Image (cartoon, rainbow over all chains, first blue to last red; front, top):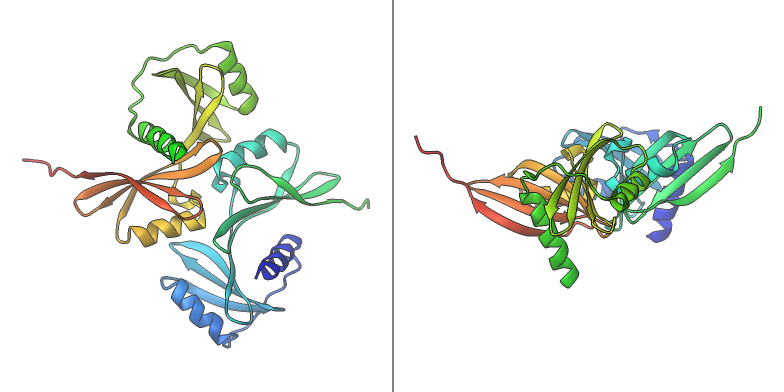
Length: 149
Length: 152
């Protein structure tokens, strides 16, 4: 399961997960598991990518994404957020240390009963992905130098 | 256990505080710690809560924040009122599961000793409940108050 979480997180951060639309039932086990976990979900849409199926849905007027493996196990729940939805310490730490960057991606992820946050920052030269698992501090998850044109 | 009792007590003080104290000028240690911690803070307003604890209310990135310092300039706690949208997924789920059919009246995000939790005020039936919900989904009811019906 940990490997699945790692692969999923990495593909989401890198933007390499390509989920194809599919109106047919993709994975019956995943659907059953989803209905049990999110009984109040609305506007559910299923997509498939590699080893994962993704459910996009609305719950309490928020758009969430649930990812399942082929066995129908819930691997992670994610949602895209804005900086004011970051926990307070992560927000203040970010403001204090990364003022020279702009944000190109920010999402919250829940997997295995634990919450993590991934933020992608960019400046003219670098792209940096930070991760937090403790609601208090950021660690560098990935850093790359942008190619000069 | 001792740590939990201290933080729960502090959480309750914050939840119950009316903050009616006089506006004060704080010492240099506190001012310096505040400026270092909250670099882009705007419009700070200080007050003393007694027992050597000072509360500052300020704006940061367009949000109203609260911070609490002791006389040594140590940051004791940070807090802010948040909307349901600002709750982490797990915390929101805990509230929905633990208090179904209740009305969420107020949420105060609180960080004490680097631990984030959410003080939620919930109305359910004839009761107002103040509960502390932790980021791992655990929760603790701090206080239950029976609502008094207004007399005509």
